[in-house]
Image 1 (cartoon, rainbow, N blue to C red):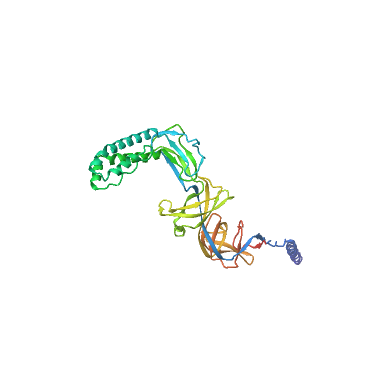
Image 2: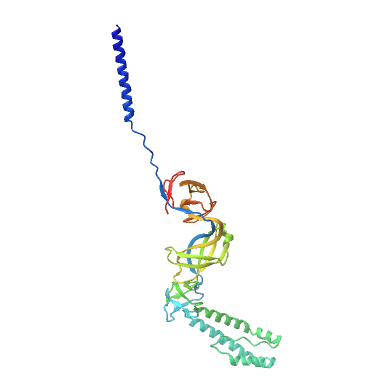
Length: 369
């Protein structure tokens, strides 16, 4: 009996010892825990130095000639050739004949009216000699100087009221003013260039019949241009006449300097903008050309300009402190197409210069010089 008990205890002991040995060996073979590798991103950084930052309003539009003339006819007749081509792109100097309408019929009518006036005055002379001898020499001289090919002369100044009534009773004044009206209308058969310029549009050709009110073309001066742009009403008080404006083409390879010449005080209710007119001159400008304008609005103190892509959640940016990224608050003042002007950054603060994909607060970074 005792022997069985001893054998049983020895078996249990052996089994327990084998278990402890196996556990000990398993613990020795257990893989040690891996150390977590620390990833450090290289980033570009800027050191903040606040200053006075100029804020400019960007807008765009097309330019039109400041001096432009829409050519319209006030008379009827055949468009006569002047020896020069009436074509788009044709240059004219001030005073050159732009367009000539045949006026033979009108001139003949003027001569007929003048002839009638001349006969009326001649038939009146005998009565003047008898009734108003003091006035006779003046009218006699008027008849002698009368020229059918020159504009009708003004009547002599009446010597007395009786002479004035006598002249009016002969219906001379009506005839005189009819002739003056015809002579004034004669000047409308010829259109002269009011300034040095060029034709940009032509709607008729020599030999065509022209009617009153007909649009004949457009004449412009290619030396000075004007651009109308729409500016937000929040900058209305900053748009002053004389303010310089930087202009450039859409490619950005050509630039000009213009100035604000007019500001419309009425606001567009639909777009909540005001009209600003910019005048510009220089080489390379063409009627209808598309330009972009940067209007200097004001200077904002204690501000810093950054890439607008760096702004997070509308009012935060990433700063670098102790080699880690932190989100700090800012006060955005102005946004343009590429940059943002902000306040609230301390001088010497180090911030990201370029956005970092996947950036998060606490991220370890290394500044790339």
